[in-house]
Amino acid sequence: MEDWRAWAVKAAEWGFDYRAGLRDLPVRPPVQPGEIAAKIAPSPPEQPEPFERVFADFEHIIAPGMTHWQHPRFFAYFPSNSAPASLIAEHLASAINAVCMLWQTSPAATELETKTIDWLRQAFGLPEAFKGCIQDTASTATLAAVLVMRERALNFTGNAAGLSGAPRLRIYCSAEAHSSIDRAVWFSGIGADNLVRIPINGPLRGADPNALRALIRADIDAGYKPAGVIANVGATGIGATDPVGELVKVAHEHDLYVHVDAAWAGAAMICPEFRTLWEGVERADSIIINPHKWLGAQIHCSAHFVRDPSSLTRTLAARPDYLHTLGLDEVVNYSEWGVPLGRQFRALKLWFVLRAYGLEGLRAMIRNHVAWSRMLCEKLRGADGFEIVTAPMLSLFSFRYAPTRADDLDALNLRLVEAINADGRIYLTQTRVDGRVAVRFQAGQFECTEDDVMSAYGVITEIASTL
Ligand code: PLP
Figure 1 (cartoon, protein in one colour):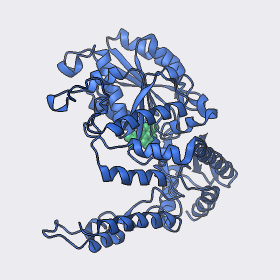
Figure 2: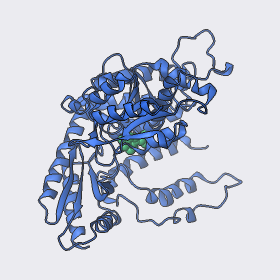
Figure 3: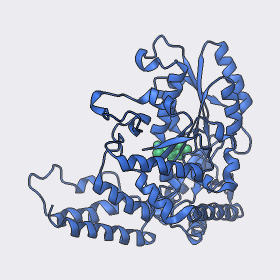
Figure 4: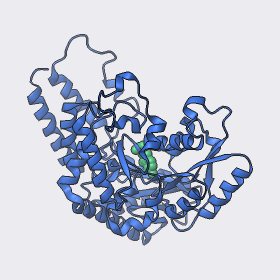
């Protein structure tokens, strides 16, 4: 491509200007399904096109049709931050574009991954016994963990023999657990019918350890083979958090493997004052935390900590001749720790972010988000017609608009979410709590300010008054 240098500079400048101008854009674009596709040529060009035209189409067709996840008033789902330092690292990593599957295909990337994962381990206050790697997503890390549960329970015979004829395995998690856990049990062949829901109990809607003990015993009596437990720290709907240490204790009484899903909330564990939320985690077998959510390292960047890497490699490593590193049998080959073979160079962005902001910088950001979210929650609690459904878990809470005149509150709150998102000044999503619709609010965007968070009050109450 001609003028690569000039276009690379233009792209970097575009990114800078885009970020600088985000506050003036609607968070969710005002587009209809099919509208963007209709503007894209039906077939690829036979001849090269001038790059001006390619870039102009990006600016005029694609960018305006994107939901702006880096918008400071993005309060939906969970954040997916891309700090400027991460963005710069990604540019460098994509220039190199190494496939980081083996040490020899990416020596520096492999060794930096080992180091940055250990930096994160220290940052989260986890014991030295934990090793880890950077997976693409929490979903594949959880799949890897469930496959390990399956193989341990079957004495590492499942990969060879399959599941027919094997004892029926059981996995336990609470009803609040993320859908990636349901999918992991489907994909592992264990099956949704063998995912047992532990009743919830207590203020953070965590799984009841006594109920877990009773479920395991009943399953053993009925001829099932319990294989593992998945504990939530900050589940997606409302931030439900299990008593991790107590679940680990029950699980380990039966030699079950425990995986902790702290995909979102784990980032906050860089602040020592929040670590009571996952007390006992040091005895878990596996933990997933997504720096690509709340720590500024852009997607994909999921930190997967394990106590015993050999259980992962025994389950997942395939070693055909073409993947051998001749003369270096002892090196770490991170593709053996996960599902995909090809892997991006993900450690660079983490390294850049940790160094550019420092743990204190990242802690300050997270503490601000938590404090501002609590302030907004209190303000909404006092607003006419509003009720708080679940109290803040870190920076996530849920509320409902419940004016006395309304009869169908679920429909009203779904209309409220849609009207807010169509308005565009802020972006929110909904969930269900005890079967009833609630509106979720979370603050977590890297550049959001107290004013951005508190501006949500005016938008929510103004739009609610028009329904
Ligand atoms: N676990 C929790 C608690 C989540 O909130 C999410 C996504 O939001 C996931 C797992 C899945 O994360 P990923 O998109 O990295 O697979």
